[in-house]
Amino acid sequence: MTEDVKAKLSEYRDSIDNIDAALIYLLSERFKVTEKVGLFKKKYDLPPADPDREQRQITRLRELAKSAKLDPDFSEQFINFVIEEVIRNHKKIRKS
Ligand SMILES: O=C(O)C(=O)C[C@]1(C(=O)O)C=C[C@@H](O)C=C1
Image (cartoon, rainbow, N blue to C red; front, side, top):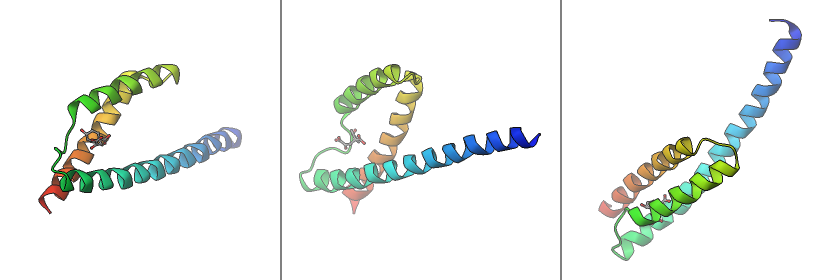
């Protein structure tokens, strides 16, 4: 690798590191809110999962992904992955 190539790759990676940090902070904020939702659902005896809400989120995010030139299937997989973890947390809170 030439010095120029190394420098360019390092520049791209610095940018990736910043974006990854932003994603972690955003996810952390999302999970702080969903923890409140979990406690709220426990208090009012609401079910951990709401499939209708999930479907609306998926539809909305797929549209947003298209306009952002991101793969809508990837976006759907990503939000499903996050929601799965939220539901697991809601169930834990419910049992606590
Ligand atoms: O909106 C809710 O009811 C939530 O519990 C939050 C959330 C989400 O993470 O977005 C999680 C589980 C539900 O199935 C739907 C959405």
